[in-house]
Length: 391
Image (cartoon, rainbow, N blue to C red; front, side, top):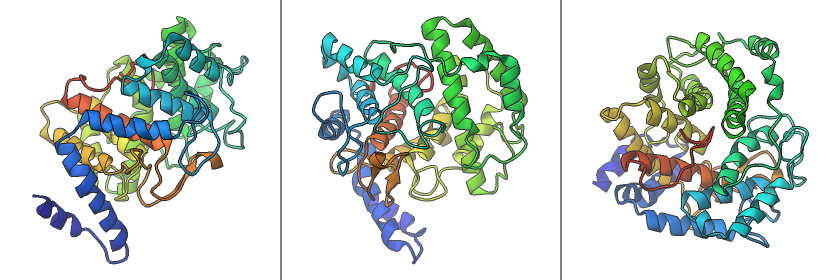
């Protein structure tokens, strides 16, 4: 069986990059396929927690990003908290420890906008980006607070300017919704960050203005849906790059829809096109060494929009599980993209080629958790129902 799989995969190898692709194949054979077929939750937990513990500095709530790094940062602490919570380890902390961890997060929060600022991370990207930085971190950290059974010290006010619906409409109208959204256009990450925090303010603070703004944004986005793809923006569906990017764009927006269980048009079309983003190794990127983000984006769309009786979806997710598992290293951590280093917004949040890091370990574990829970009726991993995270 494994020999047949190996022979099939080898047909896609080109002479120029044969060495790197053989490395990918070896990982699938030794770490992916067998671990997917005989998934062992307890073994996975031990290995993953071992990596998390190896990244800890000084105390139980301070963590670095990767083995080659030296400095702690709030992002890595958040990812540690989320990983421990998925594996049910947060409940082993005392109430005073949970409070201490939450107070550590609180120490970075500013009262004026409610966002978190770690001096170890401040650079030109941190203040005004949505793929990484203060606004992006907010969507992650609210899940960490929930894991600790706490809320932030201050309400997150950075989204309150969108309560002015004239301002919000003017901002959305500046976007050309009829063009292809390349990676240089970060409006999808921005919308995910805004909508997730609006949902959080609505559900955790009873903020009716946040709800009103959400309804306006939903109606606006519904009016901009492309009926050809069921997603947003112009897309040549025969172009693998454009199709992959369009699915990623849709994921960032639809996570809010999933959380609110809002009706989504063209579900079958979205599933059909998302299935086409899967490559021959099981990941969902144009490059065979697809990234944690590319994989998760398509996985989420299939989990939420695919029918349970659709064998295409089930087969796709099984292949994806093997691929994601193949991105785990011997130390128990995961890589963001095989055979490539990662620079994630800041020098102290970077990792070397094939080096495990905290972001990839959290995001790839989340992919594994969601696929396993899908097949096991949500009975294995602990995943919080928080905006931007789960529905």
